[in-house]
Length: 120
Image (cartoon, rainbow, N blue to C red):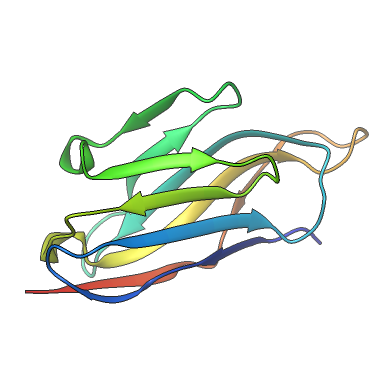
């Protein structure tokens, strides 16, 4: 069973930085779009940033200029977050459209979430 494994969350002061990582638990055939979502207590889950297979990116207005989504050749996707604000506090989730093998269709996978807490 393929899982998305996230890491990099934690507690940071306002103005600080964190880098989140997301990777599949084993080698897979194909990765299409990957996105980071977040969900704060009492709020709906929202899209933070996304990157498609070709490397094109898009961001929520609230994080533009502060967050950067990227990927490496090992198919790990990163979310670099700078100038963090208390309102960035949330559980962050990795979401990916993956084709596990040639014989299987593309499916949506979610990670287990990693907590980011920004203190004022």
